[in-house]
Length: 112
Image (cartoon, rainbow, N blue to C red; front, side):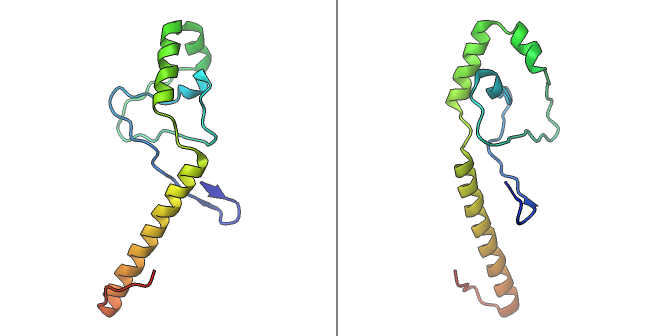
């Protein structure tokens, strides 16, 4: 989530892919979310196939299966992600104040 005023870019983990999971097929079946989503990988093998090539050679039953898969695991809306990010930021801020207060004053009480 990026805001022009703050010029800060934030990243939110939407879903962790497991072996056999797919990413990026939503645009093929018309189920794209209203936000920009990217896959970030750490030592995972990713196969990149052009959209046009896939659309030209994928059997219809595969496209139907992908559409069903995309509907079973929909991406959260921009609103949902913003709310999650806000909650995470509040929790992070609280923990930071609590730690600072404890280290400086030896007091575990922090005003919320």
